[in-house]
Length: 411
Image 1 (cartoon, rainbow, N blue to C red):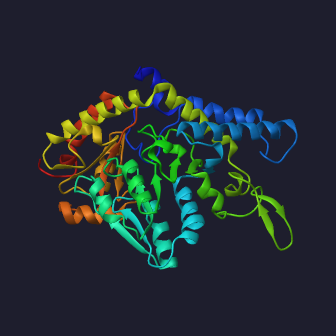
Image 2: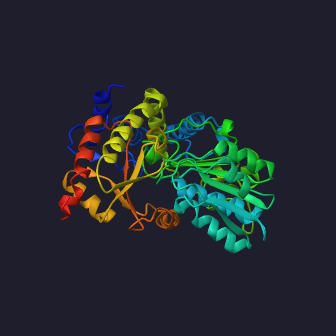
Image 3: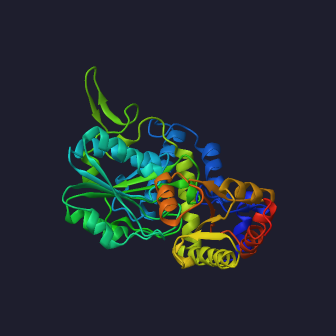
């Protein structure tokens, strides 16, 4: 990769002195994505799927072409298996309400892990309470590793749904989701994979994975905010009731009844986000143009510099595997005596942006505090992307070496 040329594609980075290491929260957008959104509003801005005039037809084409692009990107078997949503959170809630409320029964088990983002915990808590089901947690190793044996032990014939993150947003560890899908299906369960942190870093094939549902957000890819996707196997989606009801998701409406539209539109009520769908398609084109192999190599090199540099700094504790390549762009850490919020604030003075807190993963923070004797129920997190540089990594390490001094410690 020509990192200089790539950074020139990102207006916010091209002339900035900020080291942006909060990519796990949201990625930056290349000009190609911004242009796709702008072009939609400049050339075909009309309500898709409703008008018979040229602009509306053009908007419909842009929207459906984006659907086809997203389906190809994750190798869905059918464009109709790709439902557009706002983000991963909405996608998981759609499955929880439309599938979980109908298919989960009293005494069933819903299996998730302690590492899950709140978005993959709270909907299942709701389903468990509403249906009298049991929410069952898989506890990882202290480095975040979940083994196939752990999944095999947790998933029994009582399991109705297995919901796992493809990559942890705190530990950076990839879960064995393909093997998990096989185990779930052996017990008659379905599996939902939270791909929010997976798709930006790992080339994904939902057919090869054999997951039943796959949720992702565009803004981490790097696409626009406000657009994401839910992949679902057609046979499941066809039997599910709509998540929301209103315009465009119907075929016929009478005073006391309605007939829903065919897939995928029965899950996309109201005016759709066509402009950002076009931006998402452009983001996927951009990623494919660079290639996952090149992206992973760049991210692994940056993580390696960060981890090797931080290991030589006293009082720094890194969480996750020892191998930088297993972190998928995420380095989560703490510094003795320094609250993560203070670490983030100090680094901000050096124009270095990281995330600090519980990362919407409080059960994992509780687990790490117990198992790893963490001083605070929170961590600092540096998350990199393919457009970050070695120089930025070195600048980050140099700043980390001074944090305790800046916060008034003697060393």
